[in-house]
Image (tube, rainbow, N blue to C red):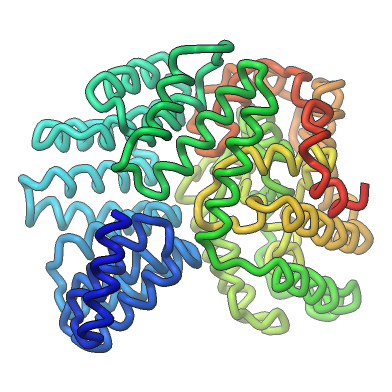
Length: 520
């Protein structure tokens, strides 16, 4: 691929107005982890030849890498305006909508693609992805099988395995991954997925196989290499080889950080502006325009701070439904004037209707989008009776867990220790602001360490805060059968354990920059 990149760059230099060369260079640059430059060449291809639909598709792919999934949609929409039946653009839009948790829209679009292209393995695969996002797991599994019957694919096998993991069907997922790796031993995403659920031993054959693949394969894409580095890192750490494992993860983080457009300064300014805008006086003056439903429970906090655990405990209650991480609020308040009561009420009503569609009979519904901590001011105005639960965890433990996790393109601050520490401090300062101005009957803080030390006491505290009668099943949260889509999908299906408390002590010699940024 490096040779292809160099040849295409030469072609572009020789003929700067060749749209095909620009478009092909964009494809190769994305595969090599250079999406910023890839987006430039895809844009140039579009400028030269506005009817080149594939260039819009490739611009969407690059934009998704650079700025997150939302940034891909305008480019896909532009492609479909020019060629409404283009299969690649249709499937990319459906897949992007699925990643944005807009499952019903994704399903509708993907079904249309399958109807028009019934023999397309990729169309059935993306319909499976859309159905999975819509929590229609049996139908999704059937579509993955239909895709496999048309063209055997390790990628589809990995999708099936990850869907099984979401449902807690780990043994089936592992069997699926074993089959995939037997047929596709160089498939990096399969190794990465396997590393998420496997306890490795020192010198294990799997670790050696991944290391050999990373060193010896010339066909790895940029993302393949990142996934392998994280997989090897997790495996080595699990096997007790902390130094070697952390080194691999640090390399993967460095590669990921180099490929995305992110500014910690912008996030710091944003959080300061939020606190300045949503003062206690502002919230008091603009109250009275929201929906009075007591149904929503908002679980917020840093990623890896215990939000999934708190959701699982409460979702085990017979009157509570755990809806997972819903992107609705973040999208609804984008550009919204917080002083417009009518607009706030409209957004609140739509949100409540969205919740009701997911669990119409539930007395309480949990929205566990951690980053709603940015929108607490809007939440108070939109949903004054909603209960907000802030999950806290030791700063170094939280940030270490973030650093060891390969997140998707929506999170940009986790791949550099200094930026991660600065982000945590800005978040902590914002949470201090919310703590000072929110009423105690609507805002509760719970520490991960306290849950580990006293599960029943903290569970009763959570249930009481939510205005519900006590339910013993909350203590058997690990037995609750429900889909879990976050990085904690395996942890919340285990009984409470203490090994993650103080975990950063084992990594202290590798976390100097993080500790300095945190002010420790």
